[in-house]
Length: 303
Image (cartoon, rainbow, N blue to C red; front, side, top):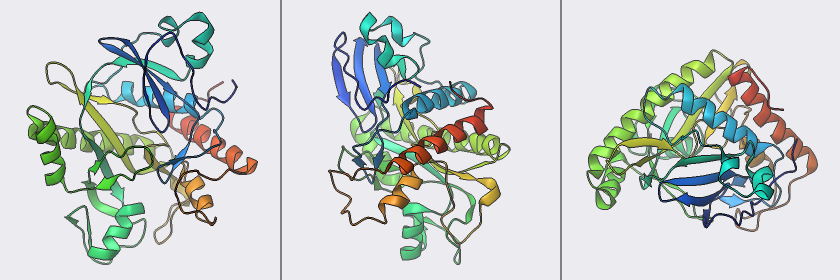
């Protein structure tokens, strides 16, 4: 396994920005280079310790889903090798962990689909009987499978801020305020997200993984065509539960970074930067969970 990468340092391309996990560079007017680091964020705080191999797993898993679900909606992939757009000395930073993608205009919302009642949805439900304004039947337990998946969009947060769950009406208004034909795009993104989730959840369940919820991001090209962008159905953007140990009434064990969140909840930490250091056993177990999820879903393991 290559050395963990906390932050890329590519100088042959202009840096566009750094997200919680990804570093973005401009290749030209029509393409971006996205480097997926081994950074881990929890409670919207980037933690100081990388998770070895995480960036490679996220990149490979996202590509797996992009290709598997390409019939639902176009995506950002270009097929251009990242090693071909950087300097020779920088190829080790992008090999296996980067993508050259279309340069698209993102929608200003996250498209969240929930199939189970957990996380912030569970908190909302206990307080109001609804999740993002969607009414649910009374008496549901924590981690209960919902009668049908629901679309619960969120605003996009800057680093250090928290995403905010909003109603579809507010999400649609936000899109309409910033994009031509924005309201129609919000509806198209909602419908695409629901279809993507349904197909992915069925596939994953047959392989022993419950996708409890997930978030998608979408963008448009110059013609206004909606594309799936960023990442898709990875342990960073989804809750993956082992189907054989799932039961209602508890927060199930997971293949995703919920394992780290659960550890952090045991600490005296105010969930603000800087984040605490992670013990070596938590780092190793988290890396193993990411690798195991990839192996179950794809039937193969990364070198």
